[in-house]
Image (cartoon, rainbow, N blue to C red; front, side, top):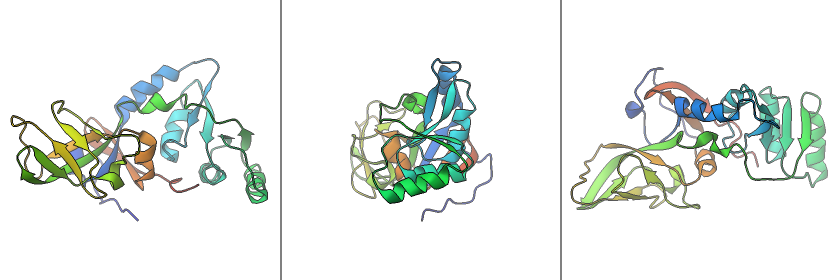
Length: 230
């Protein structure tokens, strides 16, 4: 299991161990303002991030009514965390899953809604990144990162490198990413970088914790509690 290195609140993001999944709270909260007072209310698609701490921020926004998950196991995790209005986006097709739903119903209101495009996925536009460091520059124009497919995913495309528009990043191998760059964009071992994953949901499934940050400093370390709750 991934274990976050203990760093005090206020630590600069560049000092966190890499690779790390980062959530910029200022960007997240700015995106959240789009949902204030919307009619009809939307559900927070908690299956995207699987993180109770994030879901609490979402349901606190006027215009957000409860959360949505995609499995009975996810519903169990969020019900145990105190959420009492949960929609399950997929039908329960086994007797065992229906029995588990009956147990949840003692403490939470369950609804069963058809799967649909995540209306609140843009909560995370620009707010989620994976930090990485350069661990090698084997030849001109190519840098190796310590964040590969196991840190950022690849199913939906390669990540985007923040602040380096002239460079092309790829998830590379399981353990290492690759950045291709022109001669004028030199990289050195130890350089700290931020990558925007092609798919936020995939990135959350690859990490045990998300580091909540504000103004470039650590504000919290939140377990992705429903990771693996299929």
